[in-house]
Amino acid sequence: MDIEIFNQQAAAMGVQLSQPQLQQLQLFAQLLRKWNRTFNLVSRRDIGRLEQRHLLDSLTALAFLQPGKVLDIGSGAGMPGIPLAVAAPDCDFTLCDRRTRPTRFLYQVVQALALDNVNVVTSDVKELLQAPDKFHTVVARGVATAPVVWDMVQSLLDPAGRVVVFERAQQQCETQPDGGMQGVGEVELAAKEMFENNNIRMTRHSVDIPGLAIAHSLLVLERA
Image (cartoon, rainbow, N blue to C red; front, side, top):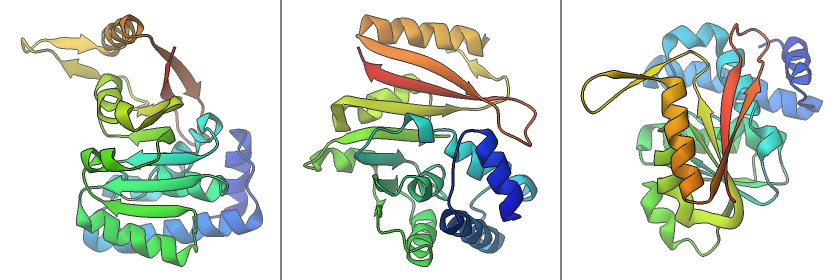
């Protein structure tokens, strides 16, 4: 990872990083590449574009974090939670995944990067329902569609909190119950109608990522 190039790319997205933060992200990328040889944490085809496809992609949510507690559900290899925790040291992050293999990796990352604002939890999201404090922001990358994510985490969310759902940059389709195909625009319209009927506001934000051909989309959900 070339720190200077990465810094320029992050700055082009409006993300300002200090030299220590850049070094932490560089170390994270090194650890991810090392562990990926054995544990297959990310797709092997993405290793060559790890910084753009995963680190910068994760940082697109930085502008939508609210101060306080942040929950990353289905954190996997730590995206978006680890890059966001590096870039937002004043927020307290909980990285949750029910699989022990990725959380073993995340424990090592937290220790190596000296991230005292990150807590790693090996459990299903449902087990967090007993937590005494609510989260101000929930982020979900590659977990499920926006309606499914909202249903999973709404009980964990502070009344004024928000959910940030990462969407794939590529145009995609979803299978309907009858076996037919439904375009992404139709899926979004159906979700938006459902949210409006339940007094939930959904807004879409498009972010260009240097090095990737297609802009990335984020869906931000908040109680109206």
